[in-house]
Image 1 (cartoon, one colour):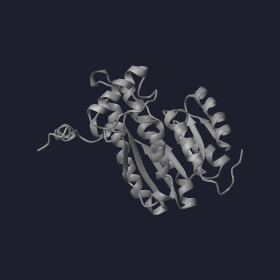
Image 2 (cartoon, rainbow, N blue to C red; image 1 turned 90 degrees about the horizontal axis):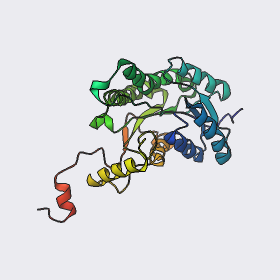
Image 3 (tube, one colour; image 1 turned 90 degrees about the vertical axis):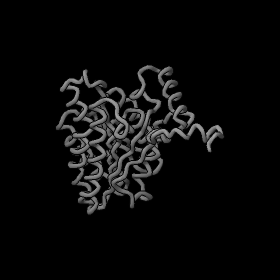
Length: 266
């Protein structure tokens, strides 16, 4: 498999999941060839041929478990050998375990940190070979609204750390012409957020409506649009930022909002 030498290449971790596939589809529309890395081999084997057919591009799938510290180097070596370049790195793979502090086991904590924080750092480190050669590129880290609001201890800490890593990399990679930003979604209608099916989604929708946000929760396509912007030339002067794709759910509710809405404000 070979790509045109001037075709832009994007590596998307967690590529076979809902956000990963939506991002691959959206970037392909912009002429960027997606490479999907995922630990779910069956999902990867289904997503890659479907995207090849849909986009007409030689989409590549790489089976990798990013909890393994050797995986980032192996993934980047594969990208190097097949394409010889990387233009966009989308750190989308995520893991959530042990939502209550009393239930946190160190193995769970370590696994979440390995996938959500250590792997993005290692992938950025391994991608230096491309940035130094191309003198440009973009990294988009998929954080979460919870870095502001809090959720499970390991997941929240890892996503807050990912925002910090984003800012550090923006400073350090800026001289190479690389922009580094984060996208922080809220609830999405995807399997990652909801194992309880339609009823759980409806409860989340109701909560968002009470907050006066939108009449729906987010979609993977909403997130993919923000990622595509940050990977595009339009964002070449944007770095070190966090774009919240939350419909306003990242904002603290204000007591006066309901009064304004029903016309009773003074």
